[in-house]
Image: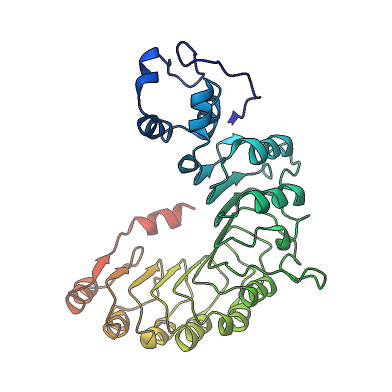
Length: 346
């Protein structure tokens, strides 16, 4: 995996500087207008972009242009607290809107690089930061109160969080007022209690829970009263039953998309609860193999805005799939059995 290199001095002219990014800067490039050079720089990775700023004073000025720093992906690099501190204070432009970072949770060196001090600098320096994506990051020593209040999307993948992560301290009483999208994948310590608490503190529009096996029907039941404005819901490999479908049908009346994957306990009785969610436009029922074609036809036929139906991994008897397609002529339907083959290989 690549590592971020230490700072070096830049040249005073753009004539003959050699960059370590696979290109040679010739004198002819100095004749290009700023807007063209900015377009070229926009294709570079973060490391190469920083190196480009060492070529000459003009390039250093261009590299700090706000258009180049809206989206920053640091996941390809090994970071420690010192490098991250230098990047956020001196290298990354202040117009940052999306930041992706990968930690060291699954590496030999498990030192924590994301600290309250770094997060404080991020919040102060990047007032436009809306999307934060963290992979393999140890957050057990951090409170969610350290995270920038400007966040609209928080995505955690294989991260460690404490059981009391979303408890609000009486001294700060800080929440995530702008959080609209919460995406958790393989965050094993995310429990019913944390789920209920984060729903209380935010007004979520998108919720994705994948591999969060500690979330059960009880957690869904306690959380749905705070999810009235939810528009997109994904539940993959969660410990839920038909009860959750009943709660969705009763409370989430503004859902536009619902994705259920590996929901092996879902039966026709549970699916029938979705008949009243008239706003549904897209529905995924991947590997929900206990569903009958008659029930799918009955439920989906009562969803006037349904335009996409994913039935991958479901084997239908007889002409079941053809009957579903005929009953939903205005809906695009997919049915790939490759999901079944993959499931049995696991």
